[in-house]
View 1 (cartoon, rainbow, N blue to C red):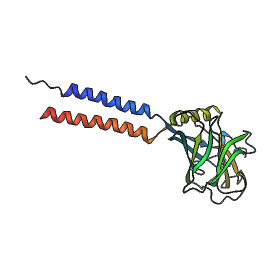
View 2 (tube, rainbow, N blue to C red; view 1 turned 120 degrees about the vertical axis):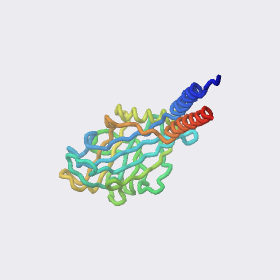
View 3 (cartoon, rainbow, N blue to C red; view 1 turned 90 degrees about the vertical axis):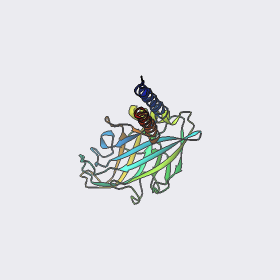
View 4 (tube, one colour; view 1 turned 45 degrees about the vertical axis):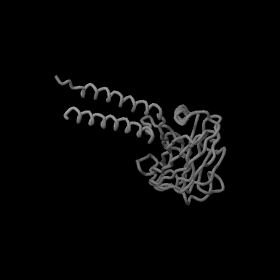
Length: 245
């Protein structure tokens, strides 16, 4: 009598494959998150011009320190707003960092956002100073020429080195997200050359975490899942061949 071990063995391999994928997912559970820059979170122009943006925060390990990759996208005009803006020039982003952490510019390669600021004040938002800011070349964060900014659907990426933290990248990202959710951390954006709005041509707008925001799995997390599932599929095919041999 021939005993078929293929099915129970496949089940064991399936369990092991899922366990591997799960462990990889747990070990790399850092998740990037996005902030929405929109009038409902605060603006210096009443209902707001309608200028909007998205800020993507992604923290990765850089030796003993952390690297914050900040993605900036001008989303003005992509959705209807009360202010009616159809386009704008996004020229600066101000943001807070975790307590005890110091930020410095690591890379602005390919970006017009090359001027680094400390203790940025945006009058009219009533939030006090932001820890840091990054902008296009200008004499001060709020004033200056709007040329070189990001217009509708344009994006850029700036990297900051974060020192002074004992947190892992995953822990830091979680702490950043929690801070923006509970208001202990803030971010704001400077817009100029706002067009199509019935409110004005200039705006400063706060960022917030939208209620329906979903964390974005980072490449390492997705790679772990793919590796685990790939191993599972390969093992099942191998056992199926043996069973039919």
